[in-house]
Image (cartoon, rainbow, N blue to C red; front, side):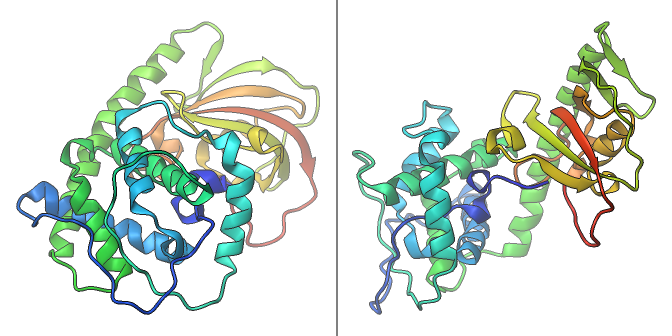
Length: 319
């Protein structure tokens, strides 16, 4: 599946870069005195790796970022909306990603947040909301320590020795994700059972459910075909994780190169149809989840099959 840059940690970057040769200055930080501190620190080191890979470290601004973290965890009304910054974000991300100049991360403490003063603040704020909403969905909200998390980011980007046993914290993080996943699995099962009870929803032996919004009259794809389709994907709580409709760019993909729920549904859909799919986790991204999708998540897709295309080029992958 093509993912919106705006929804991918690895695809979010900001306008400016921090350059210089001065020694890094550590953010304000209390010692790792609890397991939550150590776990949050570990999670910070993990996301810092994504920041470095995407060159976000060149533009990291902790004050706006931590404000975004707080608003994401608190499910507050965001100070900026995706639709208002996506064009700038895409442009700046590409410029940053293509920047080959050598930079040195210069750490600084989070200050008191007052407002989003510039595009760099805005982009860091949105990164924070994206990160914390993902952490919450994976069960980490109650274990979160903001100072320790930011310190983990700082230490990795500053190339400092880590303050924890990463292997032990990785195991602990997996335990939390697995426990949250089992909760999500039960919630997903209840959601799908409600759909099964509706007269206009068809349930297949695999567990896939679908509702026909409009029925086309064209041919049905085979598993060896390529198709062009529009789709809008959400979690069962309505959170949008990907949408070709929002991008205005249909997906072109092989029928056998998508998640199993899609592969099954596409072969039943006549061209011109629009269906709503209700996909159990084992026909979607399974117990491992995906970047924007928590483990064990049931998914909802609205899919419109536009046409069957010529044979697929080798190596293409998608949803």
